[in-house]
Image (cartoon, one colour):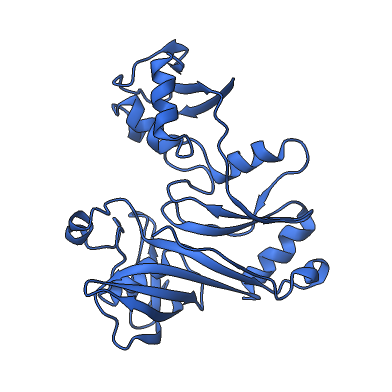
Length: 284
């Protein structure tokens, strides 16, 4: 039997343990968590607990189960692995201090190699995520992202009809560390960095536009913040979006943003990947 552990952060104090596990262990399906409680296989600080117990800060919560979480693999060779990251799991340790892409992929690799992240997707963003297996590959791929030697394309659902239906929009982005958000401004200001976002309308249903978005620059929350600035927030975005629309469309906490295409031109020892194109369908 496997055991999955999470140390309760202070901001989760007082939450029901089943609610906490839904956030801390996103790759454990609800039926697996339900069965673990039914079989008395959930412990907090070494003691079995029921699902309605409240978690306490710094407590170690453990779930015992035979279930093995799987991260969908799109491509793999002896140097890289590309996965289809589900929404709801962070790439690295986050505020819930639980299961992450890195921890799941490390478990999958065993002692064969140490998976390394080459870029990141937000917790709520799904889609193609590139990892590598050795130091040389990591440096090549980090440089590829830095110098834009690859193409990343996303699909999203945005409020309203885009006018024009396709465009390249430029602006400036400013990080706000205190609020863990960014803001978009029209002119260069201290601390602002230039951004460019290209979009193309795939379809419009009268309420929402399905867009193909290409990042011409890659900044924190760029698509989410830039689209909201353009008065077309993404459906399900609880940080920059339209909360009334999210509630009406039953998309609260369910961001409709997916990294659907990745084309590589890394060169060097990874030149065998040059021109390789990977694509998936979005889950919405």
